[in-house]
Amino acid sequence: MSLMSYLGAIGAAQREAMDADERVIIIGEDVEANVYGTTGGGKSRADKGDFLQMYGRDRIRNTPISEEAIVGFAAGAAMTGLRPIVDLSYSSFLYMAMDQFVNQVAKNRYMFGGQASMPVVFRSAMFYGLNTGAHHSDRPYPMFMNVPGLKIIAPSSPSDAKGLLRYAIDSDDPVLTFEACLLWGSKEEVSDEEYRIPFGKARIAREGTDVTVVAISSSVPEAVAAADAMAAEGVSVEVIDPRTLVPMDTRAILESVSKTGRLVVAEPAHRTCGAAGEISAIVSEEIFDALKAPIIRVTAPDMQIPFSPALEKQMYPNRITIADAIRKVAGLR
Image 1 (cartoon, helix red, strand yellow):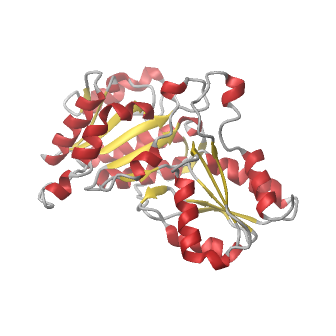
Image 2 (cartoon, rainbow, N blue to C red; image 1 turned 90 degrees about the vertical axis):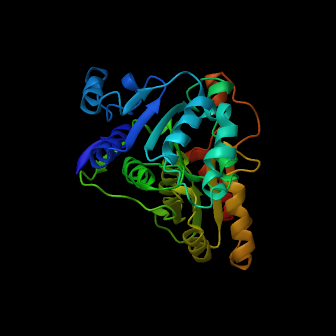
């Protein structure tokens, strides 16, 4: 075990995959000197060159500044035998390649009748909460959840970031991984051994009996903090981290809500058509009779992200707003 940051764990997963399989390549804008963990495993800027020297430019390729070209190139490379890891930087940049994602990456396995696979991983970082303005602060994973053929993951811890990414690289399906930059600096003990976390397996971040909180991405540590605070008020809160949004471990969610009878869903994306709405619908359809109170969603509002630090700070779920929702669903307010 080693103390690793979220970024360090991502770097470790990529190094393991590249050591194990020469078909694994990394492509993206300025990945040869990327400071976001792609080529350094979370090391300092001075150590970045080691990664490039280890694998060479045949396997670490800078690309033009064109997301459509990057995604199209990666799709073609995947269909012809390589296993690309694509660094798309800001998740807001995924929009520029929507045609490639929706009509090529997501559909080609189906369109070719399974004769071609699509083993490609697209990394993107959600830069919300850092006052980067409306053009760079999106959390677009709900939009891609609506595209059949894509796998969607949103790790909330270093251990999950390493294990889920390692599993994603081995997958023959296209995977989009959404990293909350607010979590990049978080650290925990992570296994030095190779391991993989299969998709569709939720994690119980905290056990409880009175209220279930399903939290996504950076909302997970906030939900755990809210649960700790509510314990002092006599409310036992169970926190479920789906980890993968497509496929989603609905069984774990349903089992938890069946036990507690109450559900709060917290996520940093917009309210309308978000993952919180989908989870709420599943619970309502499957175990409505088990609910003791209406479901409450804690999300970002349906508005553009303000540049003002003071205003943006109020946008996303935090331990205070999640705790307030827990009190309401538990009948304490």
